[in-house]
Image (cartoon, rainbow, N blue to C red):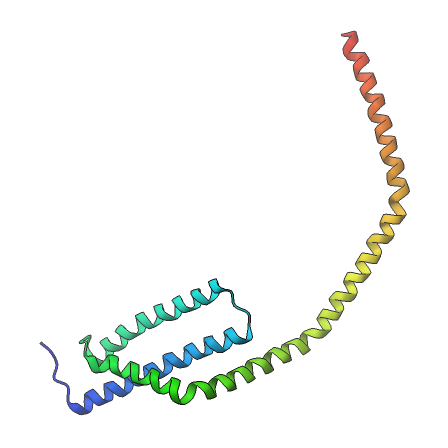
Length: 168
């Protein structure tokens, strides 16, 4: 048996669903802003979209169940659409500008904070390369002589083995 909902109750549910639509559009705008600042592959964009829509697909029925005991009413879905449209018409452009500024500022701060580590890495890499090149030059003659000596030992050992094999 369906529960009787007053007009005030229906309006309350409509407003809650509109707020959900606003919130969902707000979360999606965060994704849009992040995609503009940070490079995203097509695969990552698709994965983010799938996760977003799966989350919405789970939250909408839960919200309908909590508000209306699972009874589907057209005005509930209309509320979501109203919230999304209001967000994209009234808030989205302003929010994107603010979010892009904030993301850009955070990115700049991270770059500034990471700069000493980048220079230390660069310096250590140069020192290591110098050390490796120095060792290569230092060990070049002994290694060459060692290879010659190993080749000589290999030939002598091979000759001895051939003599032993022929005797038996």
